[in-house]
Length: 350
Image (cartoon, rainbow, N blue to C red; front, side, top):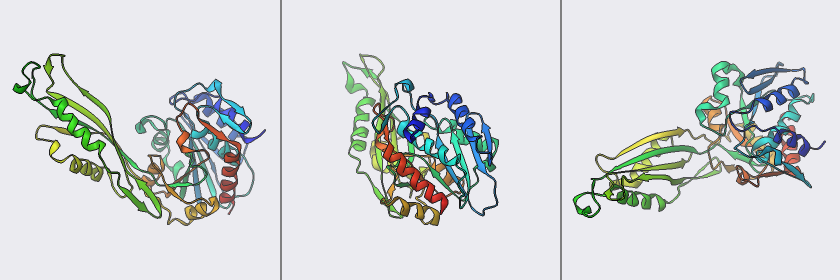
């Protein structure tokens, strides 16, 4: 069987977030064939650890859930596997399983983490379930997250801030709007400022991060004949690793300036921290060298930030094109899987 066949076996087991039990069981049954691994299952998260006496421990993690899609439609055409989750990130997971089941000697102790519920709210993440039940299982000197990264290293990650802006107006009859103030019209000014936002680019450890800001929802209006006295906007801001959530919020407020008035409110709905690239770490620097690909900053949020919060230098490194993640035409190629396996195997052996 080729690595495409191994990946297909995972892709055809449906594992939309919160429904990963069958895939977790499949993974657990594969891992127990390597009797040198200590296997722990917590809910639908499977952790496999070597238990030797080597002085360093590497953690390699991959999420096993996918966005909604029809798993039964997955197929191999030539050297390409098409199907939901093939790129994000069951191709990387298949390689991780292959290497975890290998008896090849390694230069470091390894913790393999296959976790659930990454594609939904961070509060539900399988990593948090593991941390709550047995935090020592996630202790390591360095970590890799198998998010698709085109076979190169995508270092760190952007933070994500989701806020709700409530704008006030004054209700009136639409025939006499001059007696009130239209809150929805006020929202237009705020939207225009965000639409004209100039992305800030930050370079850290040679990795570039370009910030983004988007209005993702607008609500307002009471009745067809009433001037609305309230309007709300939901805004998502992806910020660079040189800022925390408070600093990112301050930047939004500065951008909007006088468009936000007394009586208006800005509330944080969700916040996820950014993560520095950690490329001063010698292990991660060696990974970059092995790929032969220039390092990039991760444009988006990943659980690299979770490992960073735990004090573990971490990076994104996986098979497949990240631009294909969550798309209906998602795919991964045999050459991408082979190259990912080559680099990861060599990195663990050096």
